Image (cartoon, rainbow, N blue to C red; front, side, top):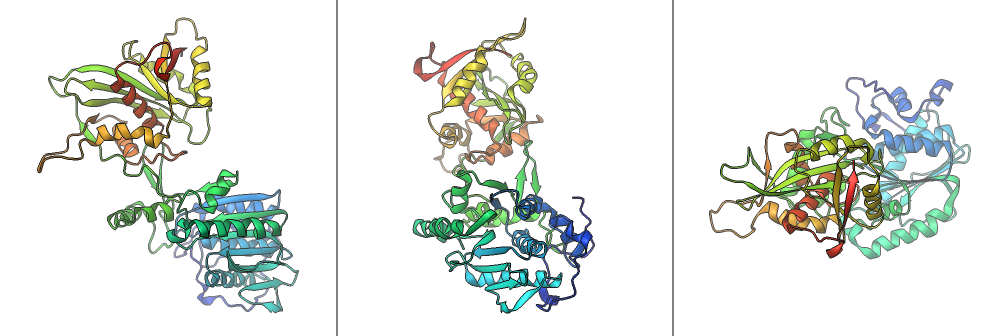
Length: 497
């Protein structure tokens, strides 16, 4: 939706002028039809619609339409209005369908009741009707028989079926999330009580910070729940950083990119980098965070240094258009000074067929004998083998791809490359760092590549295909020569591009 932001408005509702006294109904037929964000913009007198949370709003809208059993996990940064949109969303559903029963669950009953009070305030402000004899902040019922139950994740919900369940942060902090016994208790509660209280065509939305991979959100994502992932700082495919909501949600103190970087730096300096990842980036601190130091850049290959041998590394996208699925190509050269130089980096969100012309053009700049290496495992090996057996067009040069077995995850594979990149950890006093890998500067790809290396996490789904290609090129380059005829576990062949 196009934002109709009004000066001085906030995306945090001020409840000081909201009471539990019902006002005259203010929902005319036109407003009933509005989508959630447009409705908020139309009726929120001092409140701006949080358009940066549009994916969460869209999931709430589909829950309201009851097109099927909706199961979703959403993660969004703190101080960006994620709980506020749940408050408005629950009220919006109940105003449209006062006969429906909703649940709001969180880690603490007092927090649950605070938000219940706010949801009730919105509901009453815009014409909702509540039974006078069934109206507490713990549970209240509409005149049509629907309403809201608000309690902790461990609270009593027996005897309370629900059409819509909103689980807002089941864990208070990292300690609760890391406690295996507590996680098991939450998971048992979810399976035994929440799931069994769901009405047909009902919805469950888990909106939570991510402290550990094995938390409730992680388990449900693995089971196939829809997943909305919103980061405070998003890095695009070119390595540029963007703030999720640079204009707010508080217009007096916007969450700009500079402000977010300051928050991250303060947390890192305090030894709390995991808090940054969990609360602002919506995922547990990646295993590989901090694996690579800052890169060392040179303007050119030093005078008197010759490149002894070179190697390409590649990571190809076999399903064009898939989210995060990119094709990448990296060229490394080993100098006579023992330094590995990054000579070229290319990556794009393109499937192999679309990427063919660019890949072929880059490979043509070097000798045909320059090896091309890739890591693969499972079905990817068969995909590479099938790709290499494809007949090419007349006159096209065959490409020899050496497929190395990916026996470990990408974080473990990257350790050898990171060790050379970072240089010796133990140095004499005053001795400068001597990185074993240096990057050619002044190229369009230099800065994005350096940011991508520094931000490498090793987490599946991250935009790091160039790093996968980089690691493959490094390992193949330093091996010197691969086995032939499939020896040493390598397979390779000719691919006409």
